[in-house]
Image (cartoon, rainbow, N blue to C red):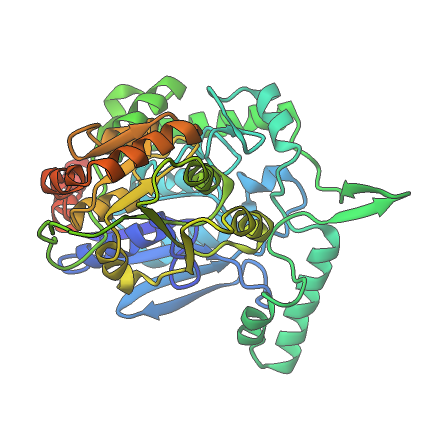
Length: 463
């Protein structure tokens, strides 16, 4: 079987859950099939929409440069330049089946191209991006839980969303691409090092000042009629995809509510992304309980809720290790958290490469997942279960599906630091419960099991 996996970003530049999942799935399928990956990549000194093929440790990758030089919001979901390149890739690859993992940074029309060539299309719903253009998080204005899409509501929410390079940033990027082309020398390594020190564009609109007031530079903000057109194109995509895969019951139920026919969607938990043997529970005899946070320090991940919970603790037996580094756009948030944590038993240990994940879980007793958005199927909870580490998580979305409250972990009310502090206190007062929860952790589905199910579903579509 010849399979093309399509995803918004990919390794090595981006290593979030969807990207790592796509890599593990592609490599598992590669053992028995011809597999390639198509993805967008933001590389500022490269010519925009350039396409090239890269071999990544035996995996054939089609890289499509997208530096977010959009003239308006419509290009975030209907991008004719992207579609032209993707059609060329489909003609070159001639896949039997295309598995879409994500279309952000690409175009909703990719599925139409696939169907026009008579190719079967499967799509996994890793988040709510089809229905929520604001990163698929269903958070109004990036902070409050959203009940669902609506043109007027989404338009108001997206007014503050920075979806493209500003005109001044676009000019800088084009100048970099022109310079690299004239010099014949790659500027990419220098840019990667410089981005942390210089004010280089990161894919967001810039600001300008007029008479002392700050304004976003002209980005053709999304109006309700543009959101209505996006919804029509999503409906067309839904009609064309042969099978949708939902990693959690929350995702399946909400997607049906938002318009995907129930007969076209199936539930399949993601395969575990950790390799190696699952850990045997360890009975710890420490004077304190070591809690851990692992993820990107961003507001929707709720690290501020966890830090405030530690401030309210009645116990001196709790310690917290924070693993993960912020994106540049979240640096202010991250630094504010470090100030709030001053004097508390909290360590900030920075980002952790994927090959060292086992070390993180061996160093903690309990993982805390305090997200304030409707997580789909958090990879970090799967990893914790694999290593027999109990979880305290928000009672929300796929998090509450993954944790059986009082059996293999605890749940707390989303965004409530007092309730979270109560749960932490409970484990500090009764540390034997940590061992009991660890013993009750059942291992998640392996990637081999997960890929085997997908292979059967692929075969069904090709009959």
